[in-house]
Image (cartoon, rainbow, N blue to C red; front, side):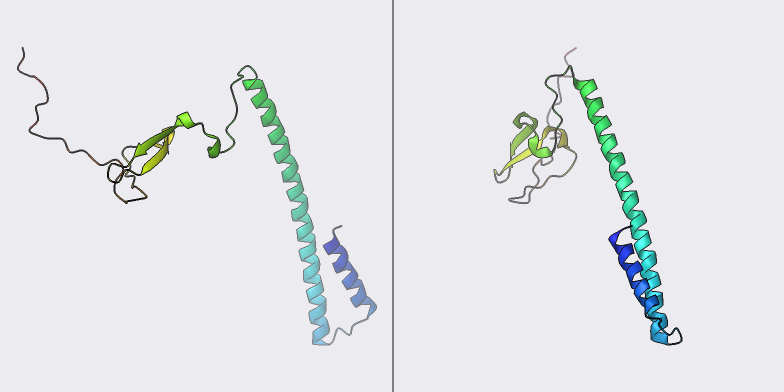
Length: 145
């Protein structure tokens, strides 16, 4: 049993030893509070046991995953799992200067989406402004047959 259920049991024993007159409303209230505390202590004990089982299960999955990674990547000497985004190598970053103010920005190679509107944090203008095509400009020599 947990400390909580032990304490509630002790309080219930105290109340029984005091032979409280159950005809008084305050004594009825006290006994109902003790009963509710007992139920809460039992529920907490159940949740605690379930949490321990889940922790054991997650640890087991983690061990299995580590074994699987070792089996799959044992021949790949260069493989190192990326723990967090701060560990990204410099060659995976793109440096770009804002065309409006020249503020230096860095983007991860895989995160750049030219269809998205990126705004410069320094000046608030678009980092990749849309270029309007000149309709009068020749598109190529179509008459060279």
